[in-house]
Image 1: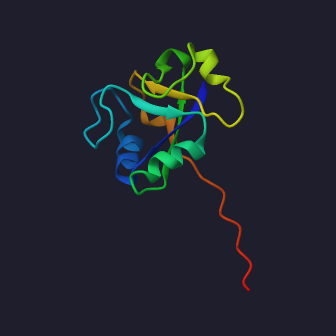
Image 2: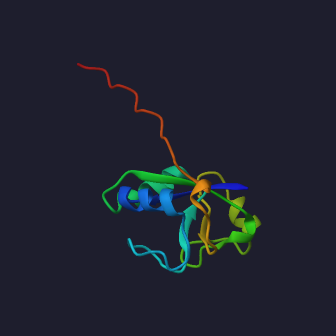
Amino acid sequence: MIPLYHGTTQASAEHFLRAGWAPLSGERGGQPRHLHLTTDPEDALRHAGEKGERTVLRIMVEPSEIIVDPEGGVGASLAEELSLPQGIPGSFALTRPIGPHRLSLHAFPAPEPQPEF
């Protein structure tokens, strides 16, 4: 299994953590045919930030459940997209249903305290 990340709203994350995800289950917004995933949790956080949120899900997937993202992927194959150079996150689309047991909230390290002057 491959860990990938999805930036979303807190409400959508709660729904997915309870019910999982399936195509056409995008009633809470997003793309109903597939779920956008990335190899980089920071990239997923950026996508969540576009919605004014900071919620990132970690989703464990099988290679047979994903395709290179037709809107943002650059690799010609899954292998190419998974092995992009450092700093370029892979972009995928989940196309098959997954149960809630394969999703979890991704925990980012707490920010280091800034010195007071």
